[in-house]
Image 1: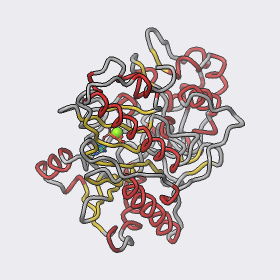
Image 2: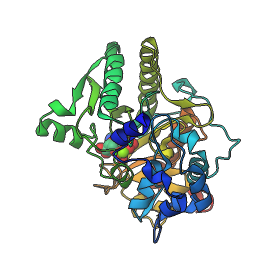
Image 3: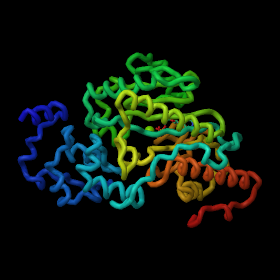
Image 4: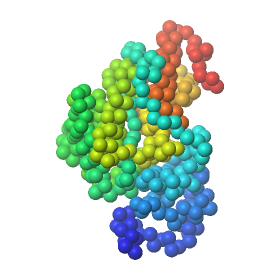
Length: 383
Ligand code: ADP
Ligand code: MG
C-alpha cells in the first residue's frame, strides 16, 4: 500500500486501474500511424499491463505518446533503465522495426572512440560550414525524463556538474543553469546553435517529460563553446562537440576525449552511464539507443538541393537531412544539416566515417552540377 501511495504521488495517477481487466484499458487507435500501434497487440498489452519497474514505471507510461498523437512517430519512451527489459515485448519489436532489423540475438558493438581510425575527415570548407557530433547519455539509477521527479532531476544535474568541474585544459568550462539565464542570453545561445529550446516534439510533450521547465536544466560549456553538455533536455545529458569549418576528425577527437574523461570523473564518484550489453547506451527514446551519436555537418548545397533526387540520394547514403536550425526547421540559404540516420548496430567510428564519406560524395555531386555535368554515375545504388 505504501508503495502504491508512493507511485500515485510520483506518477501523478493511481495504479488502482489495474484492478480492471487489461482489455478495458487497451488504447483505441484510429488513424494513429506509429510503431507502438503496429506492434502492441492486445495480447502483448495484457502481458505487460500489470508489470511495474522498481521505479514505478508502467507500460502505459511508456506508450503514452503513441496514444496522444496520430501522426507518424515511434510513440514509445522509457521511464527508466528497467523499462527496456520489463517491457521488452513492446520495446524489442519497436526497436527491431525502427532500426531496420535488430533481432533478439543481435548485439550492438562495443564503444569505439578512437579518432585515429578515421580515414580523411577534413572536408572542403567551401561547402561545409560547421561540424557537430553529439550523443545522449543517462545516469544509471535515476529515472528518465518521462518518469523523473524534481528531486531526481536535480540529482542528475548535481552528478553531472560535479563531474564536469573536473575537466581540465581546453575542456575546462562552466555550468549555466537555465533558471539563472536572462531571456536575452538564452535567445543568443539558441540562435548560435549552442543551446536547446524547450522541447515541443510529440514524444517529449506527450510523455510529460517537459514538466517543471526550466528546473534543473542547463548548459555546460568550455570557454571556446566547442565542447558542450546539455543537462536534462530530452535525455539526462547530451554531450556535444562542435566547431566552425570542415574538420570532422578534430570534432570527433574532442568529442571522444571529453566523453571518456567525463566517464572517468563520474566513476571516481561512483556514478556511471546506463549501458546495456545488447542495446548499447540507453536513452529516453529507443531511436537514440546504441551509440546515441548524431554526427552532422552544416553543408551548403545550392545545386544538389534542387535536384529531383536530392532526398533519395541522402537516404541512399544512409544519411538524414534537417534544416539549418535543426529538426523540424527549413534550410536557409541552401544550408542543410546532414547526419547519419542510424544510431544502432555500428560503432561511433563507423558512423562518423559514414558521414565523412557521404559528405565527400555530396560535395563531388555538387561540384559536378556546378560544372554543368551529370551525376548519374555517382548515385547510390537503387536511386
Ligand atoms: P540534436 O537533436 O542532434 O541535438 P537538433 O536537430 O535538435 O539536433 O539541433 C540542435 C541544434 O544543433 C540546432 O540549433 C542545430 O542547428 C544545431 N546543429 C546541428 N548540427 C549542426 C552543425 N553541424 N553545425 C552547427 N549547428 C548544428
Ligand atoms: Mg533534438
